[in-house]
Length: 368
Image 1 (cartoon, helix red, strand yellow):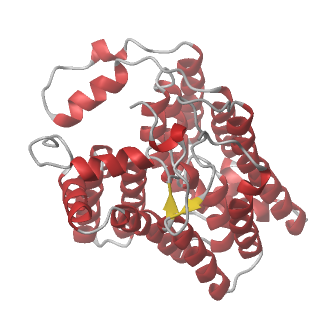
Image 2 (image 1 turned 180 degrees about the vertical axis):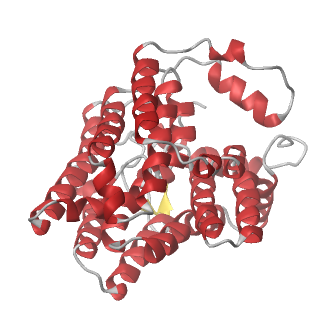
């Protein structure tokens, strides 16, 4: 049986949306805690949700240390333990690693944790992607919390978080170098140049960058080469949003810093994310996985846009509307392009749980 889309399948996401929406208007920690708990449960009991869900399950079933020798050390441990206990443990552990650092940092650093968490949920690059690219999303969150420990001068914890990130997904080792830009206080003009270069690279794709790199035979280098060797151009909508965010940041750059001096870090990191998005635009996977480590700081920056305007309620409402449309559009694009067939599926629909589910032919039994 092939899956056929039904509007009722959107109800679970609508419920989560409403809870996070209500949380975005409140400052009470109790509602913030409830929103996190709902999203966490939503993630850990899912079944077949996320394009790679069954690939992960197959890897757990087939796990053998000799066959998975190139796998990151911590992911190996999770595969092994899940194989010996129950498969869903892999998703439970990764959901906690992915979501708790977000919850923790936003509560510590964001002036409006509810709005920041809503932003995390609404930008498909973050929450929705975490349902599919599980190990990477966990690494992303660990690097995010590594930033917190770095700023708090807890350097041992910072190093541990970077090691855990790399142990989950090799890209996580970027945590050891992504803070270097913070040591150099780049100027506003320099960031304008970075933004222009990002657009230039996106327009004139540097798909031969692979030939500029020195040789090597380590796992990280070989994986990077495998990405660079594949030409998978980005889709238009996501790129438009990324460059729009970069433009708005430049437009209000100095005002945002005047509201909160910490925004200087967030702005420069996000702008680097825009740059890497453009630089690697010839490969959608690589651009997403490198730039997200920097773009995620938009979660901490968003609340600072509200004080820029006299009508703060209207400003917050416009931000929420923009994010809501962005979230809905990701579903619209996927649903519109879906035609039931053995080789096609929608990554996030239908939402099913481990307690009750149907195994659709084009989901569990699709060609690998």
